[in-house]
Length: 217
Image 1 (cartoon, rainbow, N blue to C red):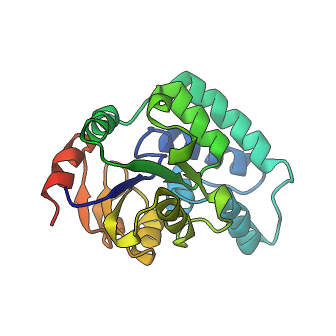
Image 2 (image 1 turned 60 degrees about the vertical axis):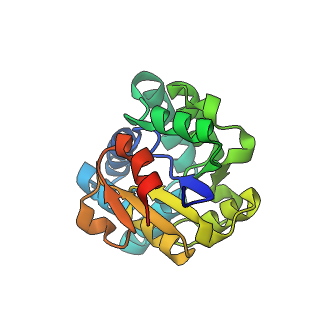
């Protein structure tokens, strides 16, 4: 196998949270007087840390979001996760295979540690991720598309960036992985392939990933 570390994005790659999250984000922004469609939320915020939401709204409108915006949003999203969230089809099989083969892996997400944990606990993926395998943009300050998060994860896992591959489904995440000097496999189940054009490889079914990792050049 080529890579010494597999770095997974979380939302949309391991847990099928992007539709839920963007539906609630669009609704809440609209409620606060910043009309946003689901499609616009996906376009502008998918794969980003919460500070990007604040920054873009202030840049576009000159208005700041309420101080409790993150707390209210996460309360709504976490409640929806408990009702609706599922693992991405094929993710469990990928993790089982990596574990059986002894291949190191981790998750590096723009989401908070709490968000990652809630999603994993709800879907049963928590069995695959102890604290040493979870990295959040909270750990580095600058989220994707900056490379800081992926470089931090690689350093903590003891692997050189060029020996890592990132599994991502957002343009921001692909840009971050490329900037970190890592290969990146773009998951196109929710994002058009053209928007992940910087990826090393593209695939649209998580069940394909194990074979892709074994046949990568």
